[in-house]
Length: 224
Image 1 (cartoon, rainbow, N blue to C red):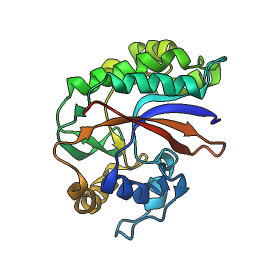
Image 2 (image 1 turned 60 degrees about the vertical axis):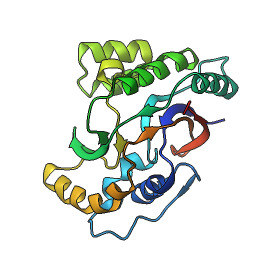
Image 3 (image 1 turned 135 degrees about the horizontal axis):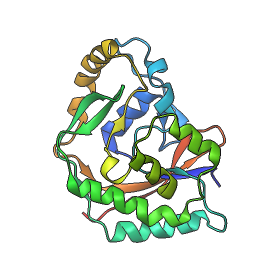
Image 4 (image 1 turned 180 degrees about the horizontal axis):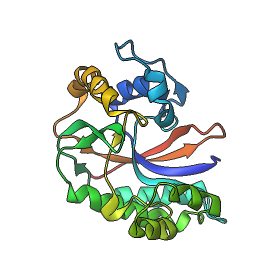
């Protein structure tokens, strides 16, 4: 059993392979990967924080299982959810530097994506243990809005519903002066790997091991 679980979207194919190398962690295979030989300085340092997750977009943030709940309960909810949920067209993705980090984000707002993410939050929440006071205090260091604070207390994570923004994280926090150089180096490598449109065709149960690294536990295809 893993220490925590989460529900992520994890790309597949060439984008997943590049993302694993770029971040240095393949969350599908569950092992470290050498960074690509790109002319970008400090790749290891700038990817240190997102490395433990691997390439992903959060749908249900990491949580401890509530007492009396098991991974089998997770699998059942995920299976039922996927069997009744259509895949979502994300449109085109683009490299963006926002909130201090670089990520792949949709070019346009996607109401169907926001609805799917909200449904995941609600469907899996009965399995989530309540946040401990230390976790609440740590979250509040980010200067949450009143709405975000209330969402954290009720749902375990502040950035959900109207505060949700899909992103495939590629760096930790970096300075603006560095960001453009990194995106210029990344663009020729990653942009040709992006399907247009990009389809979110599955959700994945993730597990966090004792070393803090996340692994793909099981992938559930959405309705195509």
